[in-house]
Length: 258
Image: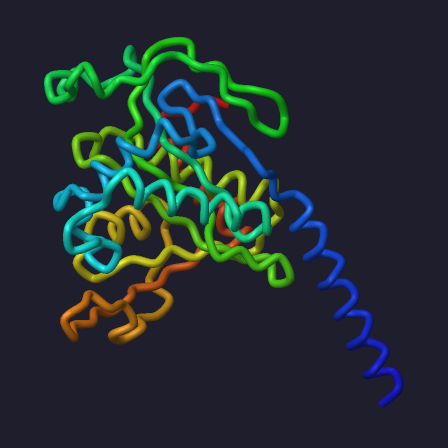
């Protein structure tokens, strides 16, 4: 019994050590600069664009449980941003705004953009230095890691994207960098993806690109209001799956070299 107790104690100490190490790696402000997109820390000048996206019934069509009856105002988004900033300081989340520089907006989307939607160039401070956005840019969504559990080395990943940019590769790129940061930098073991039966695009991406299958269906776990509930379809990808095949498959889809 003594040996078993010592083994359990040693295992608990090791799990605590790993959890603390994972927690220490969570930045207050993180960003990514890529040939297709940039992921930036959410800031006040993003709020108006995010309010428009969150109020768009097409963009939110598969996320009814996140919608407000009258849509979102910039004030609503500011409150959401500040709450998520606080959660990131507590090491519970890593939050990004997804942006696209003007020169990289897909040709078929350009005519759908009003000039006043572009924000001016800026330097964005992050924990490791800064990212220069050297031309006008668009806010096209948000993504990141949520529900972080350093002790169990787990989190979930999510994204909301402007519907004008669906099927452009931007969602795949944003999710790629979110997953990569989770597994490579934060040393997570498990990242969940929560969606719904209705969201065939996300389920298809998860199954066909990442090569994973639904882990569980939580019946009537998402409340839509007016007494209506829907099921949550839950997926999970593990570090050994990411490093084994999933990362390579996603890089191939994005035509990344190296």
